[in-house]
Amino acid sequence: MGSTVKLDHQNSSRRILSNQSSNDSVEMQKRSCGLSERSIAILFTLVASLGHVSVGTMVAWSCNAFSKLHDIEMEKRLQLLELEETEELSEHQRRSLTATPALAAAICALVVYKVYHRVGTKMFMLTAATLMIVANFLLTFGNYFWQLSVGRALAGVAAGIITTLVPLYVDEFGSKQYKPLLDSILYVQFGLGILVQLMSDLIPFTQLSSMVSSTFPIFLFIGFLFLPESARYLATSQQINQARAVLKRTHNCHDALTNQLMENSLNHWQQSKNQGGGPIGLWEGLKKFPNTRIVLPTLMLIVFQQLTDAVPMMFYLSRILSLVDGQYTPEWTAITVAAILVGSIPVYRLLNIKIGDYKVLIWSSLVMAASMATLGWHCHVQALRNHPEANTHLPLACFGVFMFMYGIGFQRIPWRWLDAAIEDDANTTVHVRTVANAISWAALYLSVRLLPFLIAFVGVGCLFWNLTVICLFAVAFILVSLPNMDRAMLHSKPLGADGGSGASSSSSSCALERVPDVEETV
Image 1 (cartoon, rainbow, N blue to C red):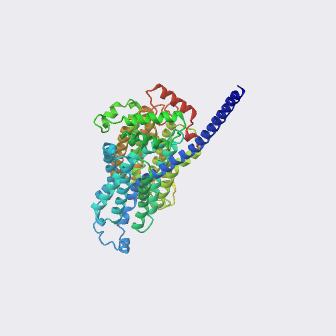
Image 2 (spheres, helix red, strand yellow):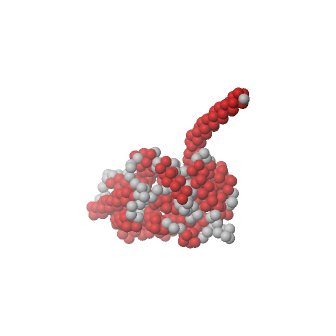
Image 3 (spheres, one colour):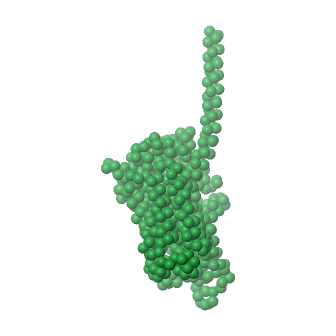
């Protein structure tokens, strides 16, 4: 009897020690797993964001490309004797080459949605990288207008694929803790592409300049060979186990709440097809979306995002700055402005300002309006004096403030609100995101086409005053259509939260209590 009691006591002690050791092991795994998962998510995002760098180089290509094509001395040095046709590019052809990528991207966003369920993210991104490489080749060695047009169109198709799929792909990596960081990487990389293109334009040899821009789609292609397929696509293709394995690489696999949210997402994605096996139609999916009170005004904000002309001006930045005058050359002023755009979000995060997104968007838009009004008045005074002041720093200061405020405001907040509004329904995320991307590129196309006309007919000073009015209209629209849209009233939920389930709603509220917002803590 005593031996039995002693044996039971030993077994009990072993179980206690085993459980304690197991708990310690799990706790250590959670800590190491959390760091590893975060690092993997950031690594995957950096690779995918090379596509946004390529899109940025595509946007800034037209800033100095036409002046290089018309540089006769450089043509003689490079012995490009077949550039006679490009020497006669009309203004209409130049505008066409500049704006073509935006139109191609808008159309491509809708095409991607129709065939995504058959191809998947990985194959699409490899295709986009290939198209961008071919586009850079045509833009470098093309001697005629049609070759340049084909190159710009292919670049636009690649941009449409990248901007449609990469944000959705990155959203799959992001848990509540570090999703804002991953989104910020995408925004910064787009500005970095613009900066790289403007700096490479200083290289006198066009071929070498284009090689610098071509490195990013090459690395994008190589990187995506090693990245996993989209978990959303795998779940849509009924490959649930593979999709679950992909999600576990970037999410805390030891947390019950995270597991529940991942399973909710997998179930939503698995059911995102109609009875015919294809994706639910865009219009059908939008009609089923319940949160239209926020989504529709936010889509209009994305239109305002392009109408403020922060990105459209990047297509013509050197040309616009040549009309403004100032202390520095247009090329170096453009580079400085692009550098300010790249650094705007990192600087804002480092400052750790405790202001909600609603106030940031309102005040940044007002400051953008003030900077454009000041720049318009400067151009008006310079025209009246008829002798520009070459030593003034005002153009650089106004453009710098404008781009910084755009970077922390309109560049990121409308998309963040849109993501927060559609997180409750994983079935319609792709629908709304696709429509928003197509609308954004279509508005960008119209702005890029109209900008040269405005400069020619009303002058660059009146153009800046027109942008002032647009920014003020945007502020009025936000105040009327989206009142009280601060983060305190629009909490974003973790991946795959199901707003219709009581258990999921309580889980989401628990997650919000447990996890602080990264933008306020990092």
